[in-house]
Image (cartoon, rainbow, N blue to C red; front, side, top):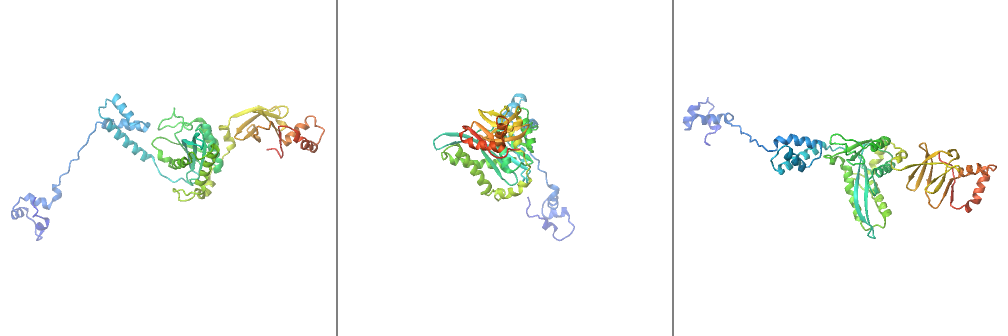
Length: 412
């Protein structure tokens, strides 16, 4: 290429150009002059190289399968090979499936800051193995829930992830928070999703979980495959639970371990700054709690506490696990529902709470004072006044074995 012929040389003088004369002057052909004066005219378009792959004609099939289900590359390769006569290597299938899944995740993942009272997230820290100071091993799980806006948390030590345990922990969380958010995001857990009937695009909720949500006042949102980062708040909390591993061989019994979990929950809410909000969660929770939906947790106890009914005897008592409990005399002959929760039993009639009793295996007869008075009045003490009966009770109470009489007004 002639480097001595430039546009500057050709245009020098400002006269009308004669390409033939310029060609003779520079001892070249006129096309060389024309090329210098009109470079765009001689530019050649580069032909793009078209790459083909044995996988090209199968990509639509792969895309459809990935959108419907979380199928691994090995499964896709086996399908193509056996049904569609694919003769390529597994490597190109794996590479395409991997890139496709990554794109799906990016498309479905939206990072957002939840508005107050709108969403919370639930998950488990599963099968954490810890030994006490005596070498006894415990396999425990930690229930996790975090409010999306304030990052206020509730965690609870459990021994399983059954549906009844899930409902029980959620009830405790609602009591701890003072309500629920409008929606709660769950993983694709079998206690929430009917996995046998669900597909990637059509989620069928577990019927009992769906009814529990309706009674509590929140909407269930599920996080299916390809959406792991949409529940990042609770996953971050799950990672924090690894702190409990530091207490391996440092606790005496399960009660002490439970206390450690409760102290961790307090620290995360009231003492430590959350990096996501750059503040202590409790400070933001003070504002978010105003937006929470109130929950009737007493009704929700029916989902995890087995109901049992007992007939009130003529002595105005029921017998539950070998121990007797009194009720007002107007309930004689009627069926009473007993809900057994931890150290307390609750007695209901037609879903209305009558009494709550603290459990004590050493006491065989448990009375409310007014019930005891009424029972005596309707037997051989019908001629005595309430005051006389009270004096009788006070005088003889010390001599009554295995009897406890709780003073005070009865529950409504």
